[in-house]
Length: 252
Image (cartoon, rainbow, N blue to C red):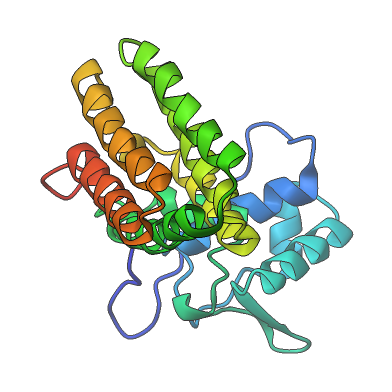
């Protein structure tokens, strides 16, 4: 993610007008401003352009701009104060579970810092849910996770299809845990991460076969009702799969 510039004051970039007028105006303004804030073009402590300038830049009404700024505030990106303008907040205040903020964050995560953090969160939550699934999951739910293995075996030669079924496999294990909050958190962050090539890598048949061998160890531990073993197998799979996809050098 881009860092604020150095110097006597924050360097603020100018916004470029749209070549075409988007259909969903407020949402388009929100996405554009979120992207510029996350990219560091409007560093923490800097002020957004005044309302009239935003109206002119995006070709929208004051009502649309006010709606967009209000949305940015609910996302934790800005503080809007009457008479003192709209100020960008520090990164710690940003709501990274908001889909728009999260998508922009991943888009500008050139050194994979946030994606590394995502994998850590997934490893912690999904290993816990694998342990819960082994302990309390119904036989029917565990058989559903087991059934995914055959489907994944058939799809190792079609990596794009495999990675879609891989998501379904993990969803089946999480469902078996009964942990609805954990499922929601993982679903939000993983869905956004999968929209970026930085996270997806370039899957091939060999990596798919390796991943499914790891899936099989998870299922074996689940069926054995081995909570600790299921947790360890899930954590190892998530972290190793990321290590295989991750570039050995930071992206520039």
